[in-house]
Amino acid sequence: MSPTSPTTSPVSPVFAGHGHVTFLGAGPGDPGLLTLRAVEALAGADVLIAEPEVLEVVRGHARAGVSTPELTVVDEASTTAGVPVLRDAVNLVMEAARGGRRVVRAVTGDPGLDGNAGAEMLACAAEGIPFEVVPGVANVVGVPAYAGVPLRDEQGTDVRFVDARTADDRCWAEVGASDGTVVVSTSLDSVAAAAGELVAAGRKPDTPLTVTIAGTTTRQRTWNATLGTIAQVFKQGKVLPSPEGHRPVIAVVGERSAPAQRDQLSWFESKPLFGWRVLVPRTKEQAASLSDQLRSYGAVPHEVPTIAVEPPRTPQQMERAVKGLVTGRYEWIAFTSVNAVKAVREKFEEYGLDARAFAGIKVAAVGEQTAAALVDFGVKPDLVPSGEQSAAGLLEDWPPYDPVFDPIDRVFLPRADIATETLVAGLIELGWEVDDVTAYRTVRASPPPADTREAIKGGGFDAVLFTSSSTVRNLVGIAGKPHNVTVIACIGPATAKTAEEHGLRVDVLSPEPSVHKLAEALAEFGLRRREAALEAGDPVTRPSERRPGVRRRRTT
Image (cartoon, rainbow, N blue to C red):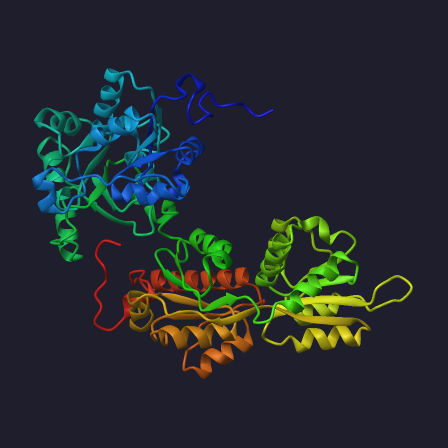
């Protein structure tokens, strides 16, 4: 039996009918660093209060109807600098809690290191409003971990944490006199000043230093330098001056914090597609697992539907076939796409049926994605191709009709309005009768937003994955031809041929007709590209950074 958390219920029964506040640490920026308790608390929230960048991290785990009141910037200096700090959060928290609502107050990093969260907790305590604290991964710990900079070595290095915005002379003198690791929270344009304070306080100018911006996100970037050279490194790299100089960074200082070993320990920034914007021409539902796989390689997937799915113009044929499933008309049903599963499932729900209606019927799926959609419906397919995931692969494994063992000789094939002659002809050749039924229609999707179209044509994407010939034709039709710096990856020879016919250079060809093998092939391409740059002594850049006249972005 697994251990039970003492805070598993979003609100304890003791507080039923009264307001309750959860102070929640959202971590440094990677949504994957949220704790299980954080996800649970977010799911039960009536009101979610957070700065915009924190809201972006946590909102996906909140329910659809959650209220997210906007924080108001009341600090004039911050408004001028464009920093989204606030501070009317305490009023919003108290007002919602007084109204008997479950409030989640989310902050960057960990609530225990956020001074404003501490003040808000005291306000709750003063009014007798119950609250709890859900710790998060602190920026000062999480960011160095993602930068490949361990804070301690086997000798147990002393570690000091300094906030440069509030540090006084005594604080700098103490850390300057120490030989331990110093983790400094500061801003990009204040790093050199903080380095100067440490040198003035006694640290040697040649002390190693790493500076990380946008830590734990795919915009992360880390610079290696020393206390004495960081200003020069920023100047030579044209990092500063920059309008983004106010952005927060984490700087790690110390001989024993292993910055010299970053080339071996930088596990995050060295991912094969780190920071690549990859266009996935599929709907969010279709692209979910593919996008997750791309993120595991460090990429930033951007889904753009090229095909819209609509019901058939005349639904009677589909209705008769579904009724035939229930009355025993078919021996087999063959699904050739996720959309076919969805169409049958929707028709089942319309008639009040569920997966039990498939009892006694053999079910075939053209590939892993379609099989997964069936399993989600509650149906385990009897046949999935052991080889190529296509109509041809399905036919290779399909048994011929045998009147001795097969009481019924008919197959139900729900499909798109695009013909499936290969499968139909093959099944007939094997002795089966086929009810080839249009379950849904595919039409060209609406054009994506203007900024996406511009990014496609202007080279703003690093790669695009084409999963069929129709995705090539439809993407070019609704958004234009991808720029020639964009890496073109195709799922198979037919798709590659269509891409070339549209004037595109195909860089990556999947070894198998599988979207996951396609993503894997793109990652291998990115890895080879990275290794070639390192071997040549060149900086590792993304394809989009090679556009003529485009200077490398400073802080991504």
